[in-house]
Length: 235
Image (tube, rainbow, N blue to C red; front, side, top):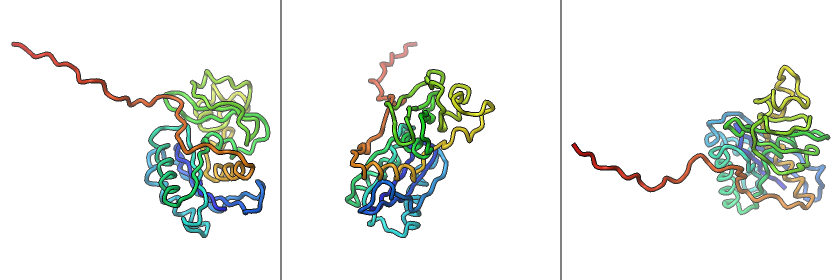
């Protein structure tokens, strides 16, 4: 089974083709081809070529894809929607199932950690999206959004771009005091990790999330109220 995975919920635009034999278990999952770049302003331009390239590198055609997995965030609205709209359109065109994977889960899985930690991504507005994990594959609570100083790390190491942005508040659980960026890696999700995690969960019989955006707060844009009354000027 070939699964196409991609994520645009962070500054990273990442795509991958992952494979699992029909008679295999979770340990047989592997990435066949992958591509990642970081450009917060070009999600719409970079995603389609990345998908084309990883499918070709995998020696496959889009018609060979059996499932699609997409990062559902949380993340900035515009970038996140690029990935979700593409995933839903492709799944409809190919007639294949489409699954959602939280972006923080992909960051956590890529870390390969075997003990407890926290993953955090940039939520803008001087806030971070974050969640606790028992290990790379197991989230222990809901994903939240808070100011860095309000996150109770409990002394746990914190990974992800959110942690690298606020090392004073989030770096005390295992990062270098001088703010070594490598202490927070991986900073962004990889489609390879997202796809392998999706396949492992499917092979384990788990039900995956729907491909719907994970929004934790209201957007800045709101519907305008009624037109303002303008008084007539008199000389």
